[in-house]
Image (cartoon, rainbow, N blue to C red; front, side):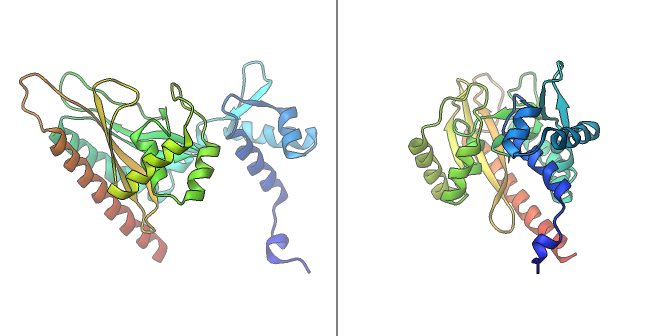
Length: 264
């Protein structure tokens, strides 16, 4: 007699999910034939599934029609997941309030299929700012956000993340031993404070936001830029405390939200 997992299988759904997971590993796109070979499916099976995914907006075709890749709809759908949606609702006004106090920009970064993605961003007040746009894919090894997202995972999960990660624009090849040294230090102190590896004169301040299982769901990052004019603004140490407090506040909110959602 078939066990329950076999009894309730949905082959068509599984084929669709297999395609989505495969496309997530090929950011530049992959052909229908390559998909069929990778998944050991017939061309006709793959064609039907791809047609449906394209029609529903989860997959897009290249201009010449030869390559398929994921659209941003998966990202949009994930933002509608209640815990994440509520976190963004709560985080945005708090981020704006802290940037006004700190006179420094900030953003939230999350990991998605090995990519490190900016999911929220608030620019500093004043006439000039240094900030990242929402949707920007940044490095794993050369950013505070990437390092902090990795640091609080198990060793096995870090290895899996490194295997899955695709280098972001400008990100150098990852030296695994050096990367593991970085994340080990972050585990000890609980945050990252580092000179930017992508821009001169910027100090990255990165703090984890945890769920109730102490798994990092996102990172609060401030790309601190030191001012040398006469404007009286908070120091690096003061800004550090402001954004660390913001991350702690979001952790407390998300932990409570997760608990309420579980109870209901």
